[in-house]
Length: 185
Image (cartoon, rainbow, N blue to C red; front, side, top):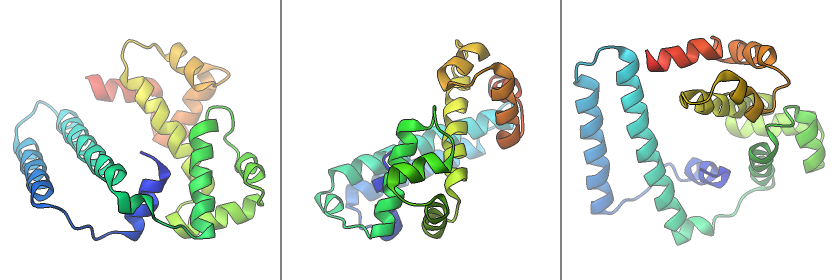
């Protein structure tokens, strides 16, 4: 999903849907209720099932947004445009640059101003968004059980496995191996 979706949804919390979209939403809700109430061997499986269904649901919302001609006409304030550009840069450069200074330089603003604007619009600091994206990318790679940890290190451009493990433990609360085991066991 692109950052413009975030801003559009932020400014359009109430969204009128067609009868067909309402029925689709109701089917998702019923399916989620069924999945949540279904007995499973462990809570991890229930959680993963629900997360996957929600991902599909949000993806359909995003597709609906991208097809909406009114959404494409949305105008952003200077600060919203700055945050949008920041998110786009993070998507492009997160593997090589994790410092707010890099992004602030690219956007021709001070790191302090960038952090202030990002925080005022999202409730989180610029650094936390960079870290969040890095953690999401590592988790996505760890979900692929055909990749060993060394391959994850290589794909995320960490200098070595030790640094990746320390980074992941600090922000995810567990080691990469522990995270992978929590998904597949």
